[in-house]
Length: 115
Length: 114
Image (tube, rainbow over all chains, first blue to last red; front, side, top):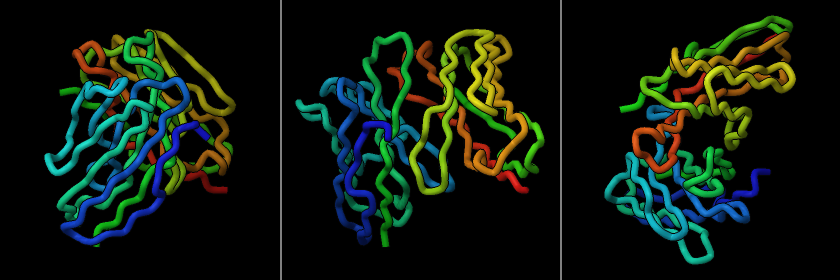
């Protein structure tokens, strides 16, 4: 158990819908990262937040957005869902941006199925 | 753009044999990570390699880093069935001004057969 929690574990929804994935980082970790894992694209970085602020963006679609709240939990919002958005979504957390290294601990993931 | 390439992508081994997984990356970095993923599960951190020449061992797995060659290896000694999983290497391209997100290879799916 990495200490990173994600809810829900599974989500089944229809095309065009909107869903919210939630992540709580390990105690003391200020950075939260979102990754998408799919068979064709592999593991792709989506977005990073540090202490409530957006720090880096990767291959995140405009239909997707995220935020980190004052208690440091984060939410990833996916809207106008398409079949191709079906994937495993991971949240990871690490201590601080400026630490000497950046070991990231991954949550159990949310499996999203879009029908 | 930083690219991380692993090979092989699929590896079928017999128990008791040795093998090496390779991870090449395209730009300067001195932070490389190895993760393990079981089917449908999360990623488990195996090794953190932070400098040229770093070598770390845990059980039957040993990882090394050559930053000059931009190469990391994950060596498996006397494989056992429990090692069957997908192994990912990931590079932190911090020197490119990133904020610490990781770039992952495609993963090596290891299957150890009796």
